[in-house]
Image (cartoon, rainbow, N blue to C red; front, side, top):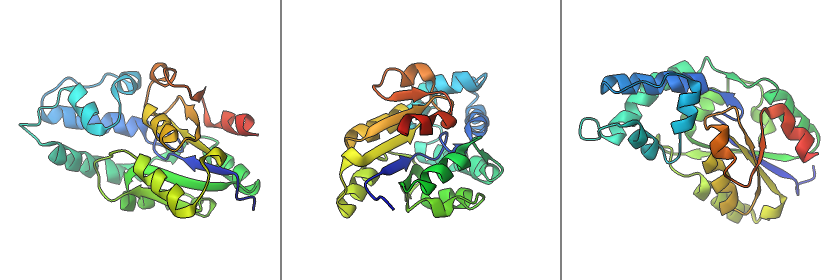
Length: 214
């Protein structure tokens, strides 16, 4: 394997197609506080952001009624069991297999709690394509940058050999934090207009990724 070529993949909205479920899940939370629900996927993509607490604030949640911690718990109670019925994006498995066959080191980096991520991941025959799974130890979806930086320090790897592939402005910010190249896929959790404000390469679908990298 040529270890100098490395891809860091985001999970939710990049490989794992859970966007519709996330719209449904946040509308469930909004209903608890009698707030206006999001009308469709595009409305969701336009307001979604990291850190998640700012996304909740933008939606109008009153943390005096439910704390952010309580809302995060309620969200995951609704989302997680239903997420096991979600699929990978079309061509995601083929894309992973392509880079695996070409000798790329592939790493999965997620803002999800690791136990939840692993339960989702085991639904698909792709686990062995990742050399390492990096995720959080909580459900609050704070920054992934620290995880990426720690990985690079522990393994003494150069950022110039990394390509970060995600679907959000935060993914671009993580790539910037580790000085890596970045490709953003514009059919995930964040609207294409927001992604275009970054300096990342923007594609519409995952099957465009291998053409860019190769």
